[in-house]
View (cartoon, rainbow, N blue to C red):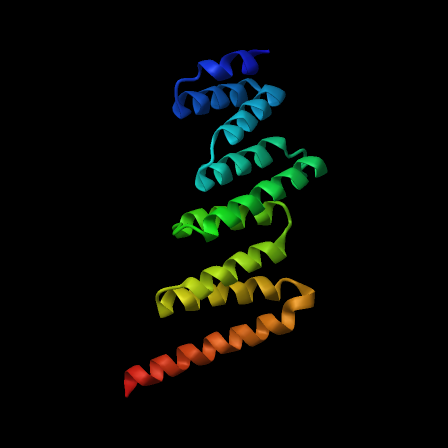
Length: 169
């Protein structure tokens, strides 16, 4: 097969991505998935792992649904990336990629847990308020967590109102 023969010869990540683009344009679904899987297996950088994982999920989705076996493996890879990120000083876009992967997999509880971790690590009141508001919004979408979402939303509103009152005085 083309992908297995060309993998060792790819001199750079740019060449691997160019191969993936060409396979996608040709509609070579199986080869595209294999090429993305090879990229996923070659990298240990959590940001690149999450990017490859999202690319693989997008490429593998049939009518918007991801194969259950792939979804299970993807969740394990995402969990491992999450552990790697917790020990590192990763920037917000990498965490956002993790949230996107969990959302794509339908793991709303895990994406909320990541948001709550980010909220606890926020360095500014504005970042903390933004994250708290996003958590509230997401909880409001989940029937079993609507009450918590409303409580969080009111806490954000009260905190914002107290902050504005303090600025006026």
